[in-house]
Amino acid sequence: QVQLVESGGGLVQAGGSLRLSCAASGRTFGANAVAWFRQAPGKEREFVSGISWNGGTTSYADSVKGRFTISRVNAKNMVYLQMNSLKFEDTAVYYCAAAPRGDWTTASAYNYWGQGTQVTVSS
Image 1: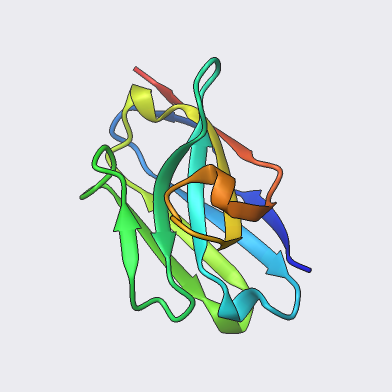
Image 2: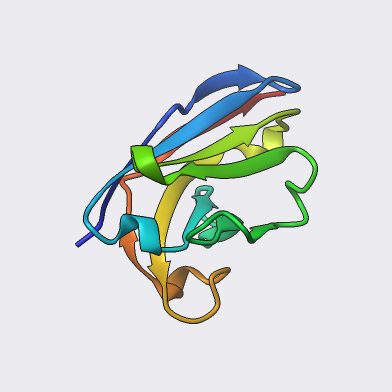
């Protein structure tokens, strides 16, 4: 009952910034935890950041801590990922996911996914 659409990806130089957006539809969005994952070619989908239903709890992968910030505005059905100081190794397709069952850092815990948005960082 949750549909997610990512946007905001693109091509940036190392050291630059992007803000990804996840637009949600569905009655239960405001009550769900939401996370960002990313997947590079040939690699497993990996956890980037997550946020609880009320924004009171956030989590970040060590590789992005201090550079990325997750936020949500439930009244707008939106979740954001502000990405600063981008590195070449951040290049991946970024996905938002909602309503985890179990460990929210594990991709298999999520039933609802967006289509992904490409982030490419040039070195």
